[in-house]
Picture 1 (cartoon, helix red, strand yellow):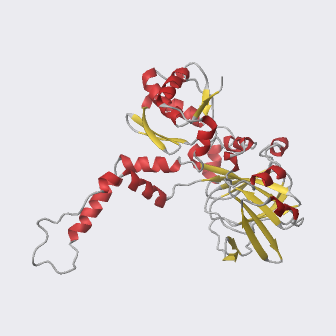
Picture 2 (cartoon, one colour):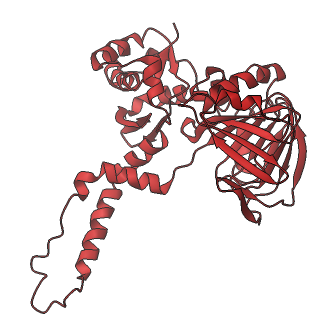
Picture 3 (cartoon, helix red, strand yellow):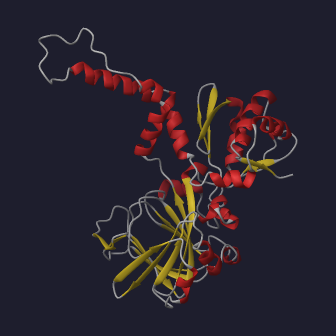
Length: 384
């Protein structure tokens, strides 16, 4: 298995020794010139003016913190001081194509596990203060330098909020106290205290990871099981004159448990999980980029896929469950079934490699069904 980024650490070692366990610093994970070309401070400020893009401006001075949500007014940048503020723009990889290269660089991770790229520009001493995140993150340094103080996972900390919308923790005992430069990468596991402060002006790229949320999966399951759960309690042969007023029969609890378990412990739970973990934050951007595709057009393009190369586009999320005789495929929050013969094709797509369908199939008709579904979801793009 190849090493991750520009290091001597294999993906296997990373997952075994670091993933969700302890921080990891990789010096020179990315080439300096690569980092310089991703996004400029001026471009980032421009994105913060856009209504559809989530952004925040955080300022602090003498212990007083202020937060302003975007879209920001351009005039705000005229009055900002030269230090103690940071601009954060969320999910910018959806809107700025060069940032998708950071997602692709994480090809040793399952695509559905990757969330988005947040970009922050900070002036001298700027940052968001010491804090915890509940998700994994790769902090990749762009232009400039930052000082990072990092503790260990599940370290005892004292939480406080210097502003109603800013959650921080008190200063903590750091295991790492380092300066990072362009191209350095710092991995932070969930619930690990960390504190970044800019040294002069600097840019940081945060590649965040998503993890399935039980509440969201349950909501998705309820949608999938609406018809199964749309039933009324029946108490024929249960009610009698000896029933106590207001007393609920034990059988109503048994009925509810069995009905919910029946809905959950079948294929619909897997469908709920797959749909949830492949949901896009901005699904409308796929339609804007690739346009609406009819079923007829998708079927025609699925035939083209046997003669041209194609790849998974950078915005899409593809995942699947392997069943005994089929694949349960999930793409951008949609579900369809595919034949088990297409496993290699799906795995190759998910690793961002170019695919020619005829290299992966023994039955074109079965593979065309899969390709039609992927094309309908605007999940793939042809390269020649």
